[in-house]
Length: 487
Image (cartoon, rainbow, N blue to C red; front, side):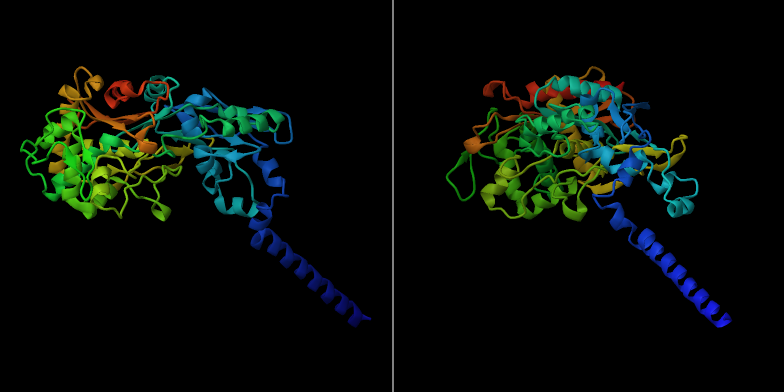
């Protein structure tokens, strides 16, 4: 009799071990597969069972949570949603998340292990913590100036602190209200459909995800390449540049809108934006030299090397396989050269920062619900874009643009401002309304370092083609953003 009891006990023990092993297999080894299964509603119910952490600008929340009383209980709310949508993105029960709501979702939703007092125990119990907060680098006054400056015109503004890479403003127009995507009702679906079908593309983050031909604002890169390569050693010496300039291998003659460009010095050509001088300099530097210069500023960063702030940034392009005429056009920001506004803010910041390119970032730190810092963004460098001496010469030339060149609309009393205008042609046979660019930096009197670098692009389809210019349309916006940042 005892023998049968022993056998039954052993068999029962084996069944218990098998049950435990299977439970471990499901809960540990295969937990990710079950968590990601669309049919599993538990994760979504848990995610929205508590208020979401906040995104802060200048120390104050621009997000919140509302108790809807539904199964997906807490809905995201936004304070002045359209103003900060290019920073926060959206958090939707139906359509997921974007921008900071996406990249910092673990902290905001309370699922990040760093929020747990005892991370190992939290992993075992799979407990959800109260949502943490994300403190951004955005300066509220600079953001207001950027949004108000665009005034509903299609375009974007990016502003960074040159020495640290902190992003001070990130505006995109037209914008949208991310709160309209919170919830589960039919109105959310209708809003999503309307926004995505709109020809104005209000959900497109033009500051980070749209690339434009940079036009003459790219001449900063070409000037840096010419100086670093030794093609130009004296910015006040004649450059032996004809006007007009016949593009290599073609009969096409490149002309200028400004006068006095024939044989102009680099300083003069930069001040009045001579296409012929910079196209010829690009050819003299050569494809290899121009590609190297552009990439040192941050162009062509894609794939695993893609720039993230932490939301990913679209790749700015400078072609690596071109003939002579294409190099000439690319060197004045045309042909296939394209850049995001953030990239062009990085170009201006590199000049202001003595040639060093600080990695741009949008998050200052993240905290748990008790205010304890769990992570802080470290400042880092992406490398040198140019020599110290080259940066100093470019600073001088950019100051000349604002004091007596095409960028006088960006001047601020008692402040050293350097800038570069750009009017970029686009479309079939360049028939599209030009894009107006202005990139700049500003340094307060007596300050050790420039406080801000700005890039503005305006694509105003309502304006007359002849009225579009970087100095007229974009420079005043940059001026007000710099003024706000300096305060």
